[in-house]
Image (cartoon, rainbow, N blue to C red; front, side, top):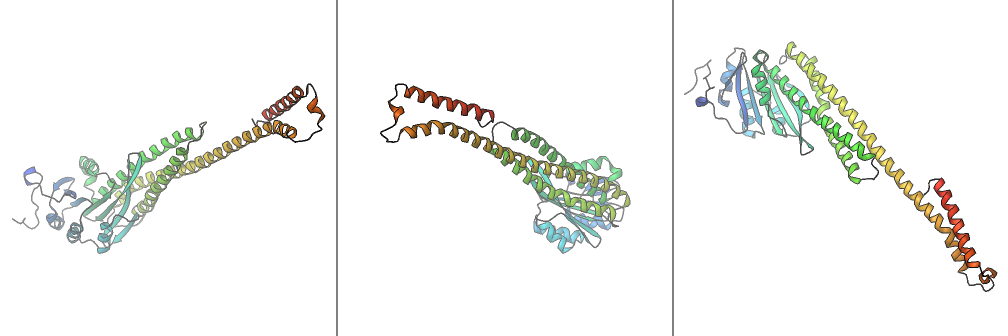
Length: 343
């Protein structure tokens, strides 16, 4: 049975809850801060009612046919839909008529390594569509937060977009803190008495992941700057104040990442310098012992020559004198090399 034009069926009860595809995490209309779950087919009906409501759809790795369905329901641009189908977009913001398309990178710390994903968002005057790919936490916490604060949700989809971007940025902070703690641990390993190869390997991996994280965080500054400074019908002046707060968090995060990268570069340089110094010390010790052994070797080679007339060979105390002389020379060399720290 089709709903009456201009009116939506109530769907909040479990018995009438809409059946949604598995990749559809959330599909609801928010009216005055109150939520009503709807099916994908009722999206156009909800948008047809001009009562200040907006539709929020959340997807996770949707199929192409589902995106085509949403394009029909919301009137999205072909290029924006094409970008949302592929999870290899650079962070950006694009305007298509009365809607915006945003692509941002998300990050999660799993098993000690950073896993990156993407979130694509379509924002219109009365709708918000989020498409998640890869390592990305669900935005149900964002929805729950706004549903507890209906006065914000009643402001429209721009505030919901603010909540999502704020959630993404907040998830960067624990990763940066974890990297800082790991760097502090590695600094102790750098100055350890013994050189360990895995220390420089960990430093390299940490710097690589920090560089990848910076590639995700840095472009957000431009995206949020456009949201806060560029006149847009999709973003109200009130919402711009909230985006400005997220921009401040991103700037501080980006500065923290740059600082960590500089400290990592310095740590790698110090580690390699210490290795070089340690190798030099080893070479000095080997050279010292070689010089110490050169004296008895020289004497032994001297008396190993096949000459007949060597008067000292026939002396009664020649052997003892020779041993004493060699021992004296070796002791003197040892004291000198010890003094100049070659031994």
